[in-house]
Amino acid sequence: MKQFTVISGKGGTGKTTLTAAFASLTKDAVIADCDVDAADMHLILKPRVLEKEDYYGLEVARIDLELCIECKKCREFCRYGAVNENFEVDPYGCEGCAVCTIICPKGAVSMKKRVSGQAFSSETRFGPMAHARLGIGEEASGKLVSVVRNNAKNLAEQYHKDLIIIDGPPGTGCSAIAAIAGTDLVLVVSEPTISGIHDMKRAIELTLHFMIPTVVCINKYDINEENTQLIEKFCTELGIPIIGRLPYDGITTKAMLQKQTLIEYAKKSEHANESEFADQVWQIWVRIEKMLMDVRYNKKD
Ligand code: SF4
Ligand code: SF4
Image (tube, rainbow, N blue to C red; front, side):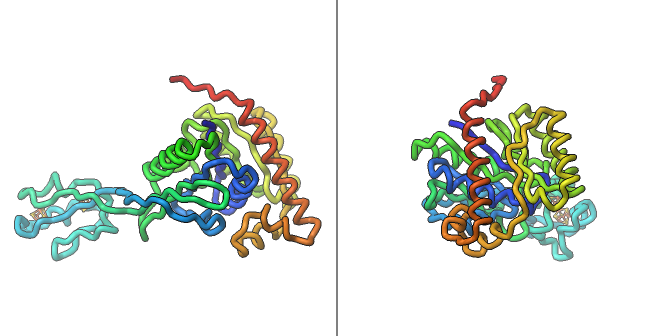
């Protein structure tokens, strides 16, 4: 089974739009929405949920008021201010550090599991999909990304699919690491802005660190061709292939508003530039499929 992840240094580069387009082009993969902090692929793919499971994130402290002698030590030591004057813990303020359990002289504090979201196994018009929803105020974590990836693997086995397409989170935090670890190929979607270049470099540093074959697609390349050249120079020096340059085009927003992938939208479009745009995305996907066939992931274990 091959695993392919799309990431970006920052949000808003067109990563999800491209990933959904790839899913609609292959129709023979499992889709994993691992951008759990800002999951929006379901808006385009409209999954029908088959299975749902609770996700437990951070543990939170709970005070047994029967045992509490109101010594205030937990309030004093909680650096997040999560214990109120009635010695109740705010579940959204508590960071689960467990300091209060250590400091409490009466053993009145214990740590409890908290449901932080749900993970789903679903089906879509393009194939099975694994995704998740975080509760309000919850932060994404690598643990939830791993849950989604495991569900995607199970779906791939169940439906006999040999490819998982992963929409990874932006940035280089633990969620991004969990989304790329052990994958066969990573596509970094970049934009030719100063911050876009900076964030792309950090994303590439991450993939190189984990020795994952990496390719780059420059989105909206025509908004600043000088910066596009800087991206090309940087990638060439590192031997990272640029597998596509996409122009700035409103088709992505129009397709999103219609809750369609840009490939679906372009099929019905009468505008030549929109068909051309979809054709370029298709060519990028053809190159990726070829690389996935060629690539040999250098697993150490
Ligand atoms: S440290 Fe323990 S006993 Fe003291 S106020 Fe907090 S919960 Fe109550
Ligand atoms: S677990 Fe940590 S953050 Fe939560 S209430 Fe106790 S000291 Fe505060």
